View 1 (tube, one colour):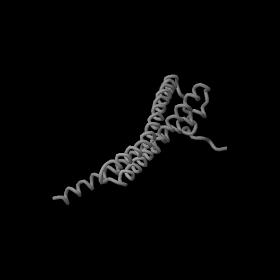
View 2: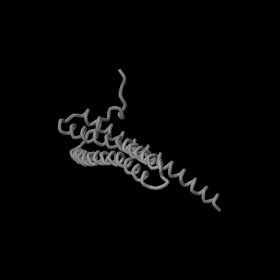
View 3: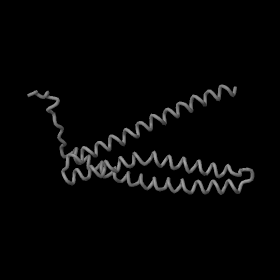
View 4: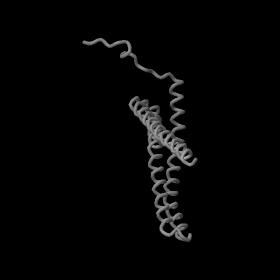
Length: 152
């Protein structure tokens, strides 16, 4: 039989202060996830009405013609894409909070493990999204400098 090292024998235990911190974090995460779902609803509503508004504006402006409808469809797509990207971190936050609340209510270690997995997924998604956005900002900055140099 193989002996376990001291590191493998180590088991993490949460004291009452750590449990209280996690309980309060779960409550705030639940609140923020509900607000996030409400924000998602507004984004979808804006997506629906943005297409209609820009189509109407485009048809009433001389010279715009079909461009208004195209711009409206593009705005609808952009807002729906934003809603789709926004859904995942809000969903992960909601699942973290609901599983953490269940873990402390039922004294269930598996639910706590699941909740921390959702919290990891939430931050991983936000981190990847930030790296992508910073990449876009860097590209925009480089193209702006190149455009400035070419305009000289």
